[in-house]
Image (cartoon, rainbow, N blue to C red; front, side, top):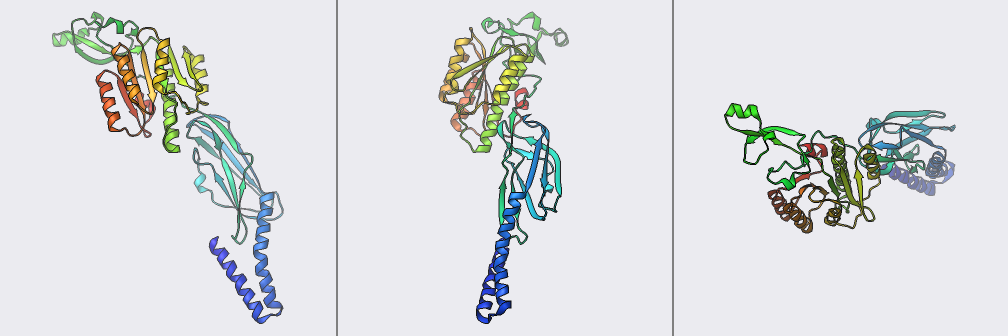
Length: 394
């Protein structure tokens, strides 16, 4: 387009020089004709801009992240002249459209329609526009381009995924039965296939008699607990200080992690409470499917503008938990205050797990993570490339 404008400018200047030196009807006709070309091009472009029509439809406005939904758009020339060059631009930062790479420019004859039916996929949670965003209209001589803003944009509400996990690896393993205060609220309903040697104080119910007979020594099963007492999930909804794309990925992983854990507890008849800050500390009890569905709907509207640190939310949750409990902290930042509080809770007999959603950690954070693990706290890091379900069940 730039080259075409340079050529047009050269023609105007050349015809003006020719007319000024030689005069005559032919030279002036060439001059006025060269001047009229850009004027006609501008008028034509504005005319197409006014008369052009685009229609788009989507299968549903409430969708789940990652699902493919039907999408179609129609370009229409309802006029009596040809629309030379029309190009459709699509929103692509948060959604993608299948087979869209094959679309270039359209030339619509009078009365012609161009319709494309495909599928659209939303990549992130939240409310945003999808589909066609603007249309570029170019004249016959490729001198001018007008970007046609589509007024009737398609806005969708994208719900987060609910990842089903067969087991929760961040749940604490059963402790020695001599520590009865930590075991009174734990159920022995899920077992690992591994065994270990019998230790004085182990429950006789845990003895694996076949393995014991084979080795002529007592062996017990290693249990992995499905917590039957109330589990507390702490969500950190503070602003993620990363670039916009990384921030969206981290936000989605935090919410999907909380949903996956809550869904697992719901399926295993475990009472769970979710704590987070949205204009004040909120807590939601999930005791069944209806409670979980309500929480799921709320996650679509959650914003990451919290001003309350997750350690304060953890401290608040202690007022609603009797004796010892199981706490899962899902955050994108580990602070010294959170580290100290988790160590203190662990020393008091509480079970804790930390899900740290971020790509890299500093040296100080690595030391804190190492210390937390040595104290018996399960710590797992989730990067932007990780699948949250795989991390939770691994």
